[in-house]
Length: 488
Image (cartoon, rainbow, N blue to C red):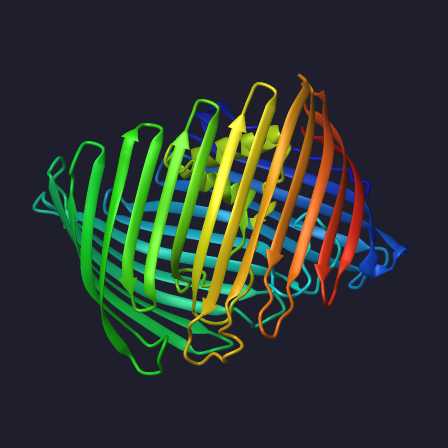
């Protein structure tokens, strides 16, 4: 595979930099050569050309903060159908302070490629081969928020939520969600005992499926047991029509705690008894000067904003890993992108796959991550396991069968000289069989060399080999890539 990429960055004025506002634009061109056994092997080898103009914006200060990253990819194929198409990439979030210290508007939007089915044809994110099981999924959310303090002792927050998901050329998974919440909590800092009250209402309408709703009320008590340890207990009620066609009310309870024995160690755990059973969220983090370790496990419903079993990219994984150390999302994004650039790693590389769902589900995810950065050697490694189970009463017995996946990936980069890097990447993702669907297994390995030819010019050479084992649509794919990146 041969690839040529050219980028141009718009310069920033000194005033813009001082205000924490950034604007950049680039254009990438790529010419690829693929050999794929599913498409005829060497006899079906083809050239694929892609052009990607993109625009990035960010604001760290002022009344509006957030980031915007959009790219449009135009593809031309020599053999496959469709011969040409266009795809979008978007990652955006913002918070606007409409009325100082009181009224805010939060929003987010994303567009990414995602598998329609976990049991269909799978391919690595960097592959340009057409995959009929992969669709472009867009999600957007908007949330007006009012915040205030009553009598100097009670924090009040009222929030409205609206979110939508749309899969390109498909109705499966498309949904609209609306709702709102009201919460009150103690506002006096330094007290040993805190309290909170909250009420929440949500309605999710699937285009292929039915409309479900859920309401909840919760009371919480917190206790600062020690300077490093805080505990909480909560109880309430929950009303929903997900597991049954008629609304059902049940009691809920939960406990939680956060322990920070040192600035570099955090252990947080929350356990709740919900209408679907036991829900939980556990996070353990430990940081050293050159390395970070993170373990995260959670079990919850997918009827939050987006309502889909979302894929997790390497960029999202690191954003979550450094959330405690860098609370500002814009500053954290800049740090993560700089780290991935130094590693020569694709931010859009999927480390945990996702797929489109057409009903409310319960998801259980476990993920272990390790990041190590030395003077010359850097490593990112992770392992994951997940289970997704539809709980909608209207779903068939076949649709209710759990989807179980697990896998691992690693990225190792070695700085050969001040201007060159050697990077090796490997991944494997497996989906277990059900009573009606066969299992599949996707393995991929990439080796690349990157050389900085000048202050604004990089060149790289890479080779990638992928193997997809499946009872219905197996394949082997090989690609060789040469690229040149120029920024102006």
